[in-house]
Image (cartoon, rainbow, N blue to C red):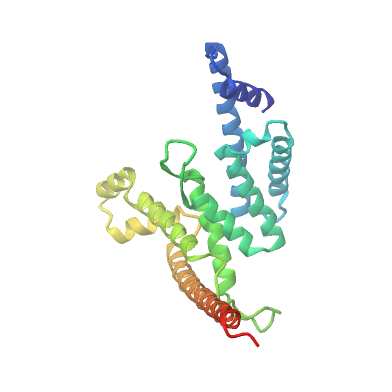
Length: 270
């Protein structure tokens, strides 16, 4: 990390004299290695979160590795340069999801999942629209989102102490829409990939059989996900509308208060 950071900073801050081919090659290879390590660490930690075993030993191991890496990155002299890299941002979001899972904080889990799956404009790059998490991580992120949605929609169990189901979702409207978009891409790719279509045509499989086989490759049931996404979107709209009404009411009261003060200021004095 230190070698890559120093070289990249030197290349970015160089003025007048162009960097040598050796410097470019070293910076490029070090940077690619750094990105690969961050991405693979994120992928391993996320996989353990979505499919954690009973003992949780592997999850603890990958969580510690991610923590050590982030501490080393953020404590370096060039942290302001490194932390802007997308692979570091991805690692930070997955690490925050892990911590929020332990703390049972659904709002933080939801926010970081959306940060990984939502579309964003690369303002510092070419201005294109990008998704932080690579496609290979989308299924596990959606699986964690499904867990959050199901917990919030769970009915009260009379045998276990539980709170009433929430009337709002941890995901906002744009967050649910991001989940829906990634879910649609995931199921479309799984069902209508060239390999699946070729195999189905050779085997004489119909559409329902093809859909069932594609669903079996996902870490969740498609119907469950569709149901929870619809419920979550409904709650998100209700919550957003309630917030807008409250903001409008607060604005009206504020305007009325200002109006009374203006009338007093402009009215006749005693």
